[in-house]
Amino acid sequence: MADRYYVTTPIYYVNDSPHIGHAYTSLACDVLARFMRLDGKEVRFLTGTDEHGQKVEKAAATAGMDPQAFTDEVSGRFRRLAEAMNFSNDDFIRTTEPRHVEAVQALWRELVARGEIYLDSYAGWYSVRDEAFYAESELVDGKAPSGAPVEWVEEPSYFFRLSAWQDRLLEHYRTHPDFILPESRRNEVMRFVEGGLQDLSVSRTSFAWGIKVPGDPGHVVYVWLDALTNYCSAVGYPDTESPDYQRFWPADLHMVGKDILRFHAVYWPAFLMAAGLEPPKRVYAHGWWTNEGQKISKSLGNVIDPRELIARYGLDPTRYFLMREVPFGADGDFSHRAMVQRMNADLANDYGNLAQRSLSMIAKNCGGVVPEPGKLDAADQALLEAATALVDRVREHLAVQQFHKALEAIWEVIGEANRYVDAQAPWTLRKTDSARMATVLYTLAEIVRRLALLTQPFMPDASAKLLDQLAVCTGARQLAHIEAALVPGTPLPKPEGVFPRYVEDAPA
RNA sequence: GGCGGAGUAGCUCAGCGGUAGAGCAGGGGAAUCAUAAUCCCUUGGUCGGGGGUUCAAAUCCCUCCUCCGCUACCA
Image: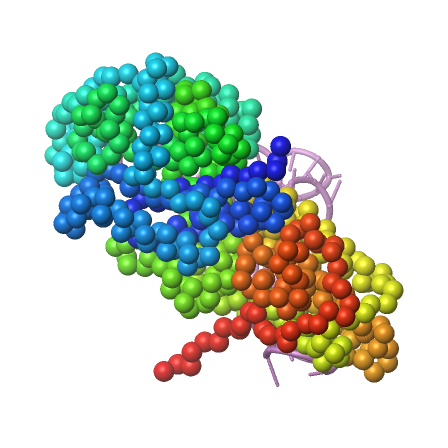
């Protein structure tokens, strides 16, 4: 049954400030969640924060704070980002919440009971300076690649039998070709797994800020086993009979950045299968942004703060740009020039102006009410049908996370509509055939309504304003209403531009 | 090093065996409803280099060059 949809962002590590990468991942999920809701599905959209681990423990200590107080604060930043970006998440999970701790410990016990976790010791060359273990093969002249001295360290650790899951993982990838997208990432993962898997150390004794291993409180659960489990804890695990779990698990989509694909596409399905649970239906790894052609890094100081984008360009234009500019999955570049281009050419000129020219003609020539159409001719019908057909086209593109193609398809119809206006020239009809003019303007109002219906997931506020200007009631904004035509005679509010043109500041 | 991907108009990219395409930028024109927005026409590329297969190659094969990704336990 496809009447439900469960989509997740990664939980964001609180040792980091929210940046464009976080906003991007969550935005993609938000667009999907909003689209699915408009398409009549019951949606669960989850995001949250990952709050355990050595780095958090240290960062809290450095800040002179208790780890929980520290994570409370940083987690709040991610909540505020979600609000600022107008994300429609239904839930926000934190790994320090009791519901999650309980889920992780239950999953752990399940894995132990099934013989998938065993106690051994973890040994390797450790560099205190780098805080990292190195493989024998990575050492250079007996030192870390960084040149730091290493020492042989052994500590007790629990291991997950990842090696036993190699064949079953490969089988899963083969029988579920859409499990990992885009395809190039799927191939990378498969090659990686084909290369052989080692058992995974899933506990740590070197720090304490984490979830205690059941029955062995000296150990803390490995951060990834902890973090990934959030997707299940949020829908009620370990109560697999709960309504939420029954409804939403397995998740339809885990959206992730390409940097954390392996954890989601290899470890996570292995953990789940080992615990007798179903793996998610899809993991999608998207690309990264550069800033004006430059790789983004903290040391370069060119990190993009989503709040600055919103302040400068506005929220919906920013959302539009991120979803439209780059083929989803690939890396992309954020540049002021490209942003302004999109804002002015796509939004202000094409879409905004189409709406504005249509609505203001109605305001001036039809008494500010939805005009009464005569019989529709072939051109009217072709345009209306093209708009209706967009529902399926957009749905198909979003089913495989091709946001840019969905928008491209919508903009094709916007282009057709602008050509239609010129071809029909209602300003001439006003003098020669006012009945035909009314038909044309009615068709245009209908087109704008249908377009606005479809742009809601991408640009919720602007689309809502357009629908308001067409006096479409809030209960008639589902995709199912695509053909629920406007009622002639309905009074319309005064039209106002929805997509302002970006004008460069005059040089000082 | 190994495996994989990509190099096509100024920019971003589509095409992947049959006379080189789109959007944006540039140029010209039309229109004047509209956020000086829209519409039409148009300049522009020996499709990274070289070799090969074929009646025919961005499109298949070989080779070279350049760039990028993956190559496990910080998240």
